[in-house]
Length: 256
Image (cartoon, rainbow, N blue to C red; front, side, top):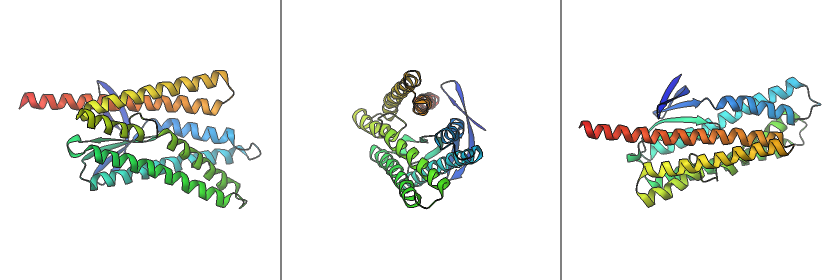
């Protein structure tokens, strides 16, 4: 286990490995996915199938989600390294990754490229799962068909969510590029867009709670609440990290 200290608070991660000289870490929020995705599949899939089959299907769905996110972030990490960006680590959240980079080696144009590549990958993955589903839907293999249908649905939702202009979502990364160009200050742009991400997370959490209380949309309500909390957590973590990095730079200047 690795511990990231940000703003005086300790964040716990699991070290996944190193690829392209980048350390990859798994955030504890994946525990929510490991529980929520199987429950969603078990409750939403036809009860005519045995519980164990629905449980296995849900576990496979959560594993495939993790694998797809890990591949996405590995590709983005490779692009970043090839473009000369120094990426120290990437933390894998349920909705994607959050990179710790040296701002001196990056630029607004490179950040925009990575944001566009990330969203393009989301769209491609959603399309691939959708095509596989339509190919298999009349094959008689109900389990595989339903698994592909769920993966297409999950990634379609991720595509929609990444359009939200809140960091660290892809839409938020694009918004950070805009503020970075306006202010010429990477840290300030990150703080502004992370607060935006935190605000969107709060709205999603409140909307999910409203659905749970006022409507029978149990799954959608739980999804919004969990994702809203995760987005707030990631946005807060990124803002604190920038603050800590700024203090470290100030200390280096004072001690030099």
